[in-house]
Length: 77
Image (tube, rainbow, N blue to C red):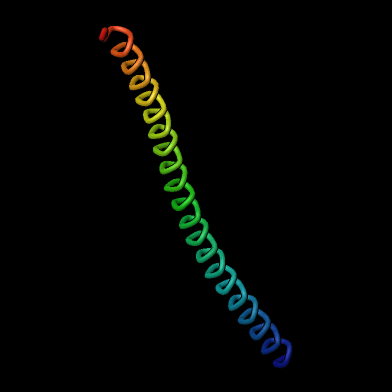
């Protein structure tokens, strides 16, 4: 009977140890996923900024070309 009790205690201790290790692993996994998500969010924001920058640059170049054409047409020699 004593052996069964010791065996049960060892089994429970081993189970508890595995449960704690699993909890630590899941916490580290959640932390790592949180880091990945924040990095992805940062990259997404940079991409959005770059798209806006490219659109503004394209618009400014079109405006510049339009102004050049306008002033070349209006300038008479």
